[in-house]
Length: 265
Figure 1 (tube, helix red, strand yellow):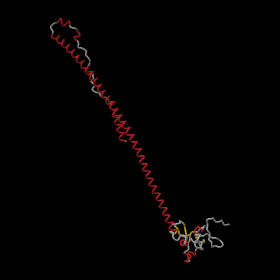
Figure 2 (cartoon, helix red, strand yellow):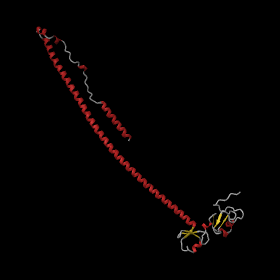
Figure 3 (cartoon, rainbow, N blue to C red):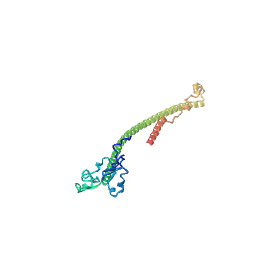
Figure 4 (tube, rainbow, N blue to C red):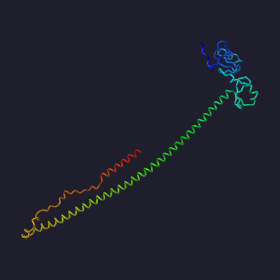
């Protein structure tokens, strides 16, 4: 029980009983040969000149239908395969080359066209890349311009706030200074008033110390003999600090934060 051969297999035309698989097909003999029967074509000088191809099932595709000769040439004028006899007939004045030469040239042309296409694609890819770069560069430029404008406005507002804060701070310090100066003047006036009163009292005491009018001496108000009870000025502390330390610390911290953020940008 032998399995049936596939349709694509070509068998030797010379084998009688058991057909062996063909190895080569001779286009001159128009016969397919197995490994055994192809031997004369590899040995006999005249047969060695025959055109051998790998075993072919449709042999007529390789044979000139007009002259029944192998198609060995290519007519470039008519773009068709021809045999050597065709060059003496319809294709006598045409440009003809061997099939091998035409095949190599077409392969080279196809490769050239592919390379040309690849190069054109590379150019287009780079043009698109340039367009992408320019597009994103424009977006970045617009974004930076918006950011610059926003930062200018922010720093402008910050400077206005700083200037306003500075003006209010100076105004506050001047107010504290005037209040301190007013307090100083009031204390000085009070001290001067006490000095005046004490001077008058001291003058009366000095007069009593040197008087010889004993009656007058005895009639003096006894309170004059006692030392007065003036204000205890040792408890008064003079405040020379008019700074606003809390606000200064806040401004210093703000400056340090800004410097740190700018250094990280």
